[in-house]
Image 1 (tube, rainbow, N blue to C red):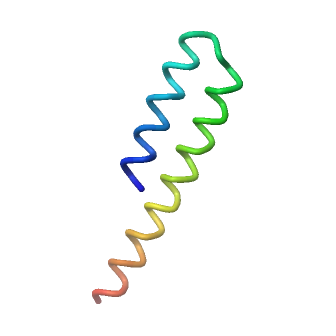
Image 2 (cartoon, rainbow, N blue to C red):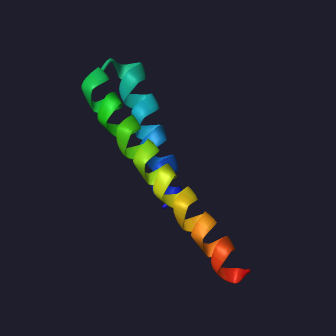
Length: 50
């Protein structure tokens, strides 16, 4: 999930630099969502090991 978040952040940056604000905003939203899910999975994995 972290890899997908990085990919979406790169897509968002490139889209915003090229002036595609709608695509950039959607890619940024997807990246944040993937990042949140990755952090939740990480926390659950750490709690599970305790």
